[in-house]
Image 1: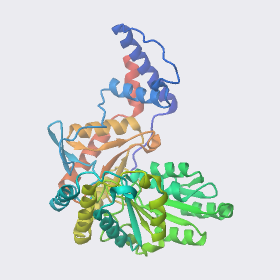
Image 2 (image 1 turned 90 degrees about the vertical axis):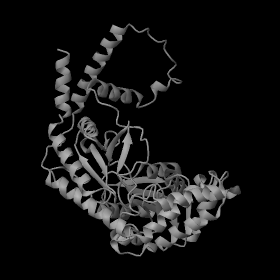
Image 3 (image 1 turned 180 degrees about the vertical axis):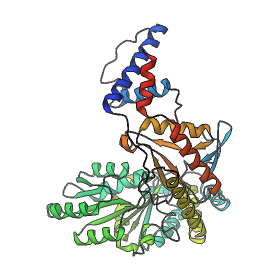
Image 4 (image 1 turned 180 degrees about the horizontal axis):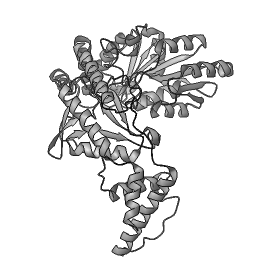
Length: 455
């Protein structure tokens, strides 16, 4: 753990900073003598939406200190361990192609063959006329991986969580999720109409105590966790979760979006990692867009669950079927995952190397287990953004995660490590991060500099 002070900008300092920004913007407006726009009706003006003003203020701060927007950069080819942006090559730590299967010849050829046979789109919902043999084969292979009776794939990973949770629970039920659960889990819980509670991140004693106090007040209980948490790269204690869910007569749903291909000796996920029977988990959710080089999501579990979702989940019933080319590509990627466990082993070695080097360099990687997702916590959103900018100038592409996506004190750079990264790339990225971290000023220092500009 780093001994570096992780102190973010205070609320008063942030207000002062925005004041300086507003003054600077006012000066520019005065200099340019722009005409004043006619007032707009507050209920039809998009600029009055909650959060819009804060977004513009953040952009103004970035412009004032010469910070380029790190988001929506255009990649000019396949974003693998190296990527092309603006005609320049970068070492890429912003891709969740964890096993390097996106663009693998076998995967690409499977997609091309599916286009030749089925066309590009399914052209209808699967309920109506969009069902293709490739959908069924992919679902069977995913189900087999989890030892499940059946599986259903959907066109969006986010929508898979939303529509599944909303379909299974209602006003008489309660959904309890980890405090750091993905947005799709929270949105599904809200849409369901069920009671919703969260427990502190990975604090299963609190989950147990909460269930002990409220379980009798609800018909059904759905516990939702993630196999690998997408911001922190840590994992829950699955055996303990299973014990809790059995004792309190609850369903357990595990989101494997970042765990498939990452955890376990063969990459079969958190159940393999802990050596437990995957059939004990009621709902396995996952995505095709990470390890499986496609796009969409899946639910695996009992046949009765899948039958029910195929008839009631709006994100499946009222959505177009998965593009056959995507299904074929993910099926091919799944075959490689099962056939080549050495890819998973390389990923584990690379993750261990990154964490070891980072901790030796005094960087704070939090609670990451070193499997694919490794944060470098700065504790300061501006500092995270500036650090990412400096690394980009040095040929490393890594994105900042800043407030409000995470609390200010948890602002970070989030590194995605894959099986294809070289040891040299990892060591260079960590060394440059540590070097620039020592040079990049804190928000308080930046505030002082801006204040000086207006004296």
